[in-house]
Length: 209
Image 1 (tube, rainbow, N blue to C red):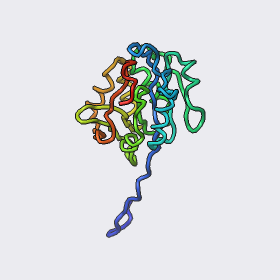
Image 2 (cartoon, one colour; image 1 turned 180 degrees about the vertical axis):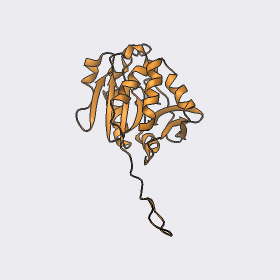
Image 3 (cartoon, rainbow, N blue to C red; image 1 turned 60 degrees about the horizontal axis):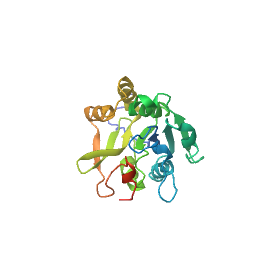
Image 4 (tube, rainbow, N blue to C red; image 1 turned 120 degrees about the horizontal axis):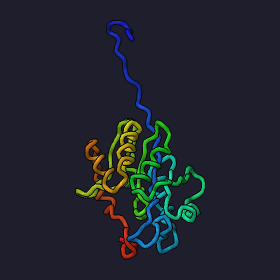
């Protein structure tokens, strides 16, 4: 639009985009000996609840919990209300990409996804807060790194979601999402000063670190 010679247009402030947490909790947990969505901390707190709490306290407006194995029992452990809802990935057994795709498809069009895993029960909300920050770019793609090791959470902007869903739907096996993120130019955000980023795959990993 021509506003006349000598008139300079000044862009207004960018509007922050809403961020929704996506907590992946669909796996069978073979190395754990049970679905991780059913695991509780020594004090009895479900890992699902801990993951939801970290995402909400870290700045997510709401959280979608993606269930699969033992979904009926796991659903009872998902916190009620407060912007939290659960869905079931029908094809969760195909691989972790199937539950990721289900979670991303469940989001509204302009929502940024903050993806985390249920087997990170000690994830501090401070890490989530650092990754989320103030998001105003729909093309955002960044993830937590711990030293040189990539980890979670992972932030995926709305303009990136379809391509990621397509990749993990074509091949839902492990490591496909990580490879896609690298090719897409994901930005790493160092969080090693806040946490070690370690997941808990086996019962021997359950003790606090």
